[in-house]
Length: 546
Image 1 (cartoon, one colour):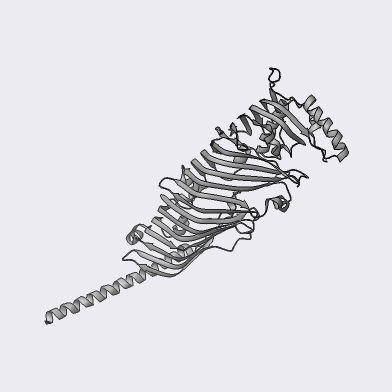
Image 2: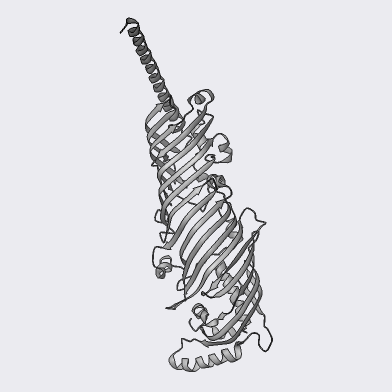
């Protein structure tokens, strides 16, 4: 090799070594600089109610890369009573790429192309969605993490891969929800001083979320819930849920005994849900539920009620009071139910057999569920088949500004004997014969009472009075009661001799019972009036049980 070539190669190697050394020193300086800034901004920042830490910081300023191992965010233990909705995060690693180093140095604006969080484990403790307590809210948003050293933060894409989320109530036996597989992608994340005034955690452009096998329990562990999978896409603002299963963890026959009060024991399954949001950011950042439409493919509901326990002595709110008492804003434009099967089963006081009523192939539409547009009116239209064969159509108007509703209902022909399973726990009566031609009902009701009219056309009504008297009394008294009921008290036909009776709906609400019970009693008052049962004559149909 010629001397000139050797000297050239030697110079090249020396220059390369020097440059490599300079690059190494710059990278080392950058690592120490970033480590100091991170410690100042988040690790040793007393204004943040969380303890944030990490291990093994690595930096490459030439490729715009940085990463840490064993990243964690833990609430500081300085509260006598832990705040609501406290978040703890542990992640195996955080990877940052596409970091604008020059922009950070020249403008104090942090610009990151991508953040990748690997296998994060997120726990949210003291979960409470029923109250809003500002003093319990931890003062955390992304801007607070950077404001001491930087003007703003922007992240092009945030990816969470194979994360898990667990939610606990103040008592985990009361509330526990597990989301074992969560994948999330957020785009165009922004954090600056505006977050302080808007009280948002961050701003973002788009989101894609998928969760598999959500499961857990709530209501003191008496109910369990399972959602196999759901997926949300910001591109079309839609949430797809394949199914939701809600069922009691104990047998329905001992459910009320466990609580010690009369209560609903519900089994519910929803399938093929599609929720179309009108404002996703309001939902995620402000807990404001704005939905254009909810489509429900199918619903199966079984409600069991045991009357052998004391009643719950609390006022049951109607729609207006219930909506305004919610701790969050809600505005749902439309809910469409394609098909539903509903069974209500009741065990009467002292009874050994339950009575029940079912509605099948129910479809319906609900519009304007809101505590924002209170001058609007909620509208419900539904139709279905009672006991599998009798068509019922109903329309309900519920002004959102007050606890008042207007109902109109039409029912087609059916055999009245099919009602025996339902009325056995309402009155000691068995229908022996009778055919309903049609029922048309209209009523207006408020929080205190309801009134209206019912056109109840039927023929051939005959009943038997059931008695718990002893054998001798039953042989005599039941025949007398049956004769009085069928020949004197009850009208066997309507119209009778060409004259159509219009029943009167008049019922004073029991405010400790819900709107379903209220609606049934409004209808039942019209039925009793239509068949000729006056207030005094009702004594004949009272049960002999004390």
